[in-house]
Figure 1 (tube, rainbow, N blue to C red):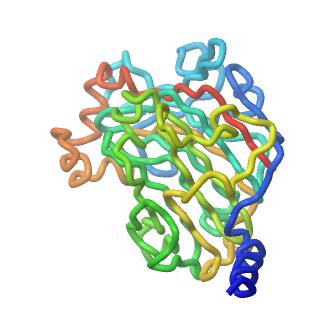
Figure 2 (cartoon, helix red, strand yellow):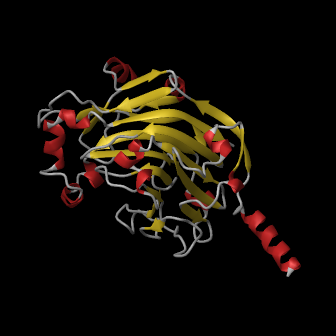
Figure 3 (spheres, rainbow, N blue to C red):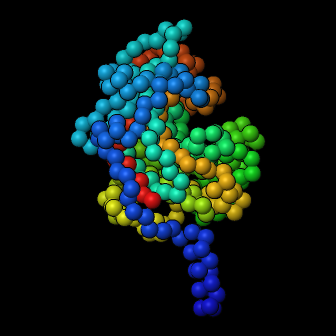
Length: 316
């Protein structure tokens, strides 16, 4: 019996299932984000009713600002839009650095909420979908819980049963086969997203990527189970002490190294678009009318459509 346990333990170590120790390589807080991330003034790839602005515009219009350890990005909440004009001003940030094997820990106080909102914290390769996408924090129209998702090209799927606390929404990660749904996992707690997340004071999201797996955890602000290295943004971390992730994506039917290239980190807020703007999704969330008209005509509805990030730590 002891010998078999030893074999199982060594096998789990070889697979990376128990996690590992990492050293902090990057730390971002306050106006440090302006040095490490670039504003992407691009057409929204998800066809949202937004106008992503450059850094100068974002700073001038207070759509991006910092104070101490508060870093805020937001959508415009004062302008009524013309139906024939551009979308609501908003922000999309991309990290200057790229990462393969790494851990990110996001300490977030507040996230965008409201009908029409589609905020996300994610990572993506340069040749989508061939370079892969990892969605860490994402949802629409203030509907909880959070959903973490992988998006890939063909040949990547997840086992139906695996060690995670969340609920799978699908196990085929191939965007072509799933109409871009990918393989998602919903977090088990309602305070992982939206208004409930904000009411609890936010919390910590962590993602670990190795060639053996991708794992995603969430701890609410006042949770008694937040690991001390996560809470304190320690210079070294050990993910084997973090407990069962809510989303676990093992490599047994998906070669991580083949489907995921070097990734940029992205934080963005779009409005409406391919997911949030679907009438069944928008109205199903209790939002009235059509999403685009709502965004055009109700600027004050986006007063709370902002991220407030305390810090981001990256480990390698």
